[in-house]
Image (cartoon, rainbow, N blue to C red; front, side, top):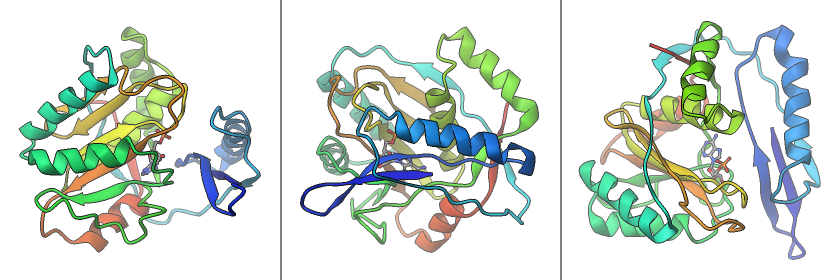
Length: 244
Ligand code: AMP
């Protein structure tokens, strides 16, 4: 699902987007909930909502759900320092980290993510306005209860967290993506995360101030990797996440 609204200058703002893998029997319910989500989004009331339904022919890849931790953080400036220290542990250089953070805090209004070369900092997504959107992802049916229980114990069993965790788990299992940073563009949602296969899904509260519309995602891509292969994996490869 994607929902947008046109500004006075004719440019479209991205209001809301979501994707999932469903059985045929689950389609109606999913579509209904996507429409409700688009219409109730706190960012803006959408002018157009597009729903695309595609049959999946490829057998989904199974990847484990990343372990979740919540870090302690009281302000966006502290968040920047925390993100920096995590990215440094992934061998991303300070100059590249600054570039990524400046982009993320600048109000990108992209539908998808930035792909950033982890050595040069070059942006590699073919369309800089749109970005690359991870799609065709979901939770294995047998794992959903376990996932809910796992998050419930931490008091964070919400659709927002479940969906972000599933997205991050798919992304982290792309062999050429080293680490992801996410700030929601929802003005009411101020917890972001850094996620990687190596260190799991690390939630960062107060990553931005309430009311701030800025947000986005950066996927740091291993230098010299096959970009078309990465985009295929993110956009097209069906992946279901499982609880271990
Ligand atoms: P959200 O967490 O939905 O508020 O999204 C925050 C930002 O992450 C959006 O503004 C997009 O730039 C990006 N984003 C959202 N969904 C996806 C996705 N499925 N794949 C890649 N990037 C995404």
